Structure formats: C-alpha cells, structure tokens
View (cartoon, rainbow, N blue to C red):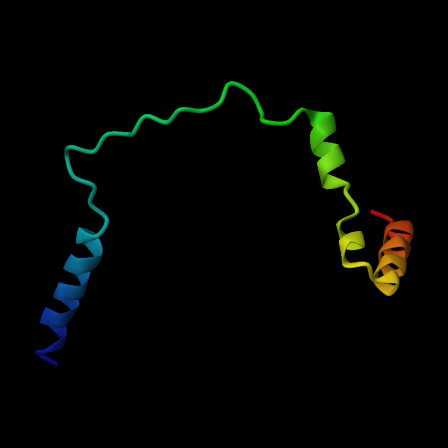
Length: 73
C-alpha cells in the first residue's frame, strides 16, 4: 500500500504536466485562401466522375450502374 501513493502522485503530475501550454504561447498566423479552389459546378463534376470505368471491368460497371439506379437516398 505505501507504494501506491507515490506512484499515483507521479502519474497525476505527468498527466497534468502534459496539458500545460506555458505563458509564451501564441497562435501562429495562417494564410487562408480568399475563396474555394473550385466553383460549385466544378466540384460536382469532379465528384460525379465514373472512377470505376478506369478498371475496364464490365462486371464492376454493371454493379455500379445497378447500385446508382437502385440507390434511394
């Protein structure tokens, strides 16, 4: 039992010490772009590409066409 208290205190000190940021922390400056890289229509066109056709697999093509046709969401 006497060994548990120092071990618990050491673990507690490590946990609390890991959360400290210090007095000299400052938020770094981040340059953000003025607008999105793509327009909405370009993003929709990019997201709706038929990526599976690059594999040249007719079974995969049929599966994807069926999945897109039967998808109700």
